[in-house]
Length: 223
Image (tube, rainbow, N blue to C red; front, top):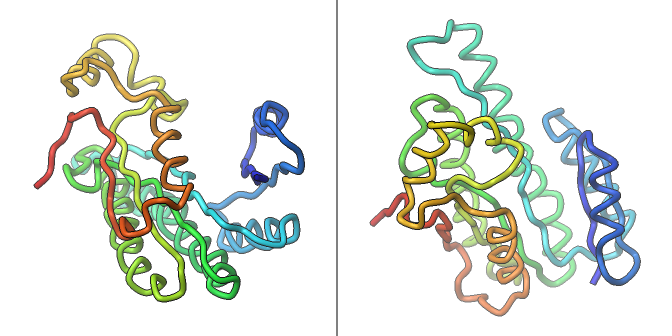
């Protein structure tokens, strides 16, 4: 198994991850997915490194707060453009570029990382919630369109996860309140989300295609 690791800025972290992986042939690829052609360039570079891509994981994203009553119109528009460009448009472009390769190659698996915010709402970052809801709808549409071609599409929807994106939020009393949202009394660890993604990547759950898997520690339950 070969892994292609995408990064935007932190080349050193990407290289440490590559060096820690067992086996050989792993590669790291740089791309700014927020740019209009960033996803297309990443797909091109990935296919230049590997003759076949069996699994695509769309995990790049940003959370940009823009509370409705505290944001001017210019800031509002800017937040929506930034958020949708990365969280939805880039994911859609990668699904297209890599998905076309999978269709031509006889199949594959696409795993998109969404959020519980797509269901419960994000009052301080409505563009984030909307972008993740759009990613869910995109994934389910593609699951139906690509199933006849042997391409399976899954969604993982975490709650809060211990990552750099939410480090500041998890500090102090606000962090304790966030942890209490789950009856487990904590937020998810990154490896717990990764384990779920790895399970889907194995391809043993093909009839699950189109499903959205919640991994939020019962902090939000939907019907």
